[in-house]
Amino acid sequence: MAIDISGREDTVPAEVASLGHDGRTVRRGPGGPASRRRPLGRTGWWAWAFLLPLLIGVGVFYIWPILQTFFYSFTTWGVFGGWTFSGLDNFHSLLTDPAFYQSLLNTAIYTAIVLIGIPIAVWLASLLNTPGLRLTSFYRVLFFLPYVAMPTAIALVWRMIFNGDFGILNWALSLVGVRGPYWLSTPGFALIAVSVVGLWSSLGFSMIILGAGLKSIPPELYEAAELDGASRARAFRSVTVPLLSPSIFFVAVVTTISSFQLFDLLYALLGSTNPVMPRTMSLVFYFYSTGFISNDKGLAAAIAIAIFILIGLVTLFQFRLQRKWVQS
Image (cartoon, rainbow, N blue to C red; front, side, top):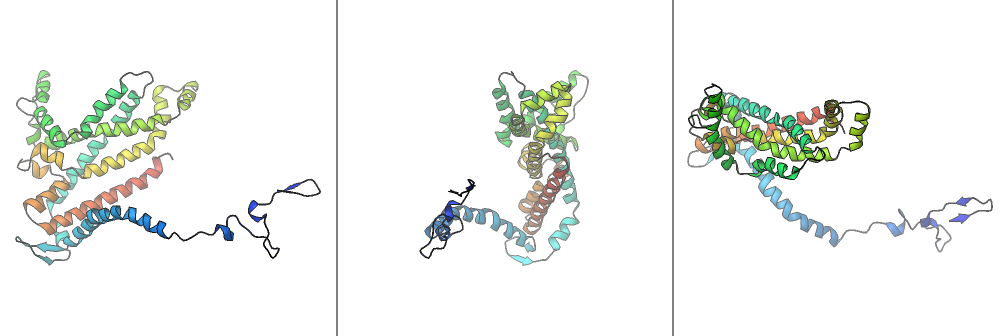
């Protein structure tokens, strides 16, 4: 700090306050000789040493299988092994197979029904976020348990509920004079039953994420809305939903990706020998049936690539669409 005769304080950066031996100012702060970055040396090698196990794992278990599957989609495999290059024949067979479009339609219907659970989760999370409500942690655990439970255990319970002869659902319908169908062996009803179970099991995860988003909304906004005469419904539409839109978008993307990967719940509920499976199977079950039952590995690889591309396109569409309704 230097003061001139006029009484003004002339601010001089600390890094130029010293002079060199030749009388010239030497900058010793940022940008000067004293602050030049030193080569990383061994530090850089240590960083790569810590990252190397993770990079090897990603390469071996993620990148290499994707590349291998992409290559196999252009080949035809024999019954006893060995492959021949077949070009785009597998993709041509896939695009001309009615089973592919049926499984794609079933997956889209399942995804749409499961996504209905997001508004339900928003409503339930809002109820659990009510000030003064007791046992909120207990309720959250109850809703979250189906998400962490094994799909096979969930399927066993719901198979008893959907049983056409002695299931509790048909018993409840009989009380109001409605004869319930055989839910898991009737075309149309089987897909709805699987979708309802998927919605129920994913509800807890959505509630946890949306509940965390609700806690980040300042309560002063609700107080201001109340002072302006807004009802609770209007405050929910004008305050809660816009500020919760980033969390809703995240849940929508994760739910869509997981819905496109439907397999274990469908397999455990219906089984591979169920007569309704050809009209209820998902894309992943179509892949499983082609690759492990029909033993057509080349076509199965093409199905896997198609699923990969479809998930990428749907996710890209969601990211494009979020610019119009997600509040940053």
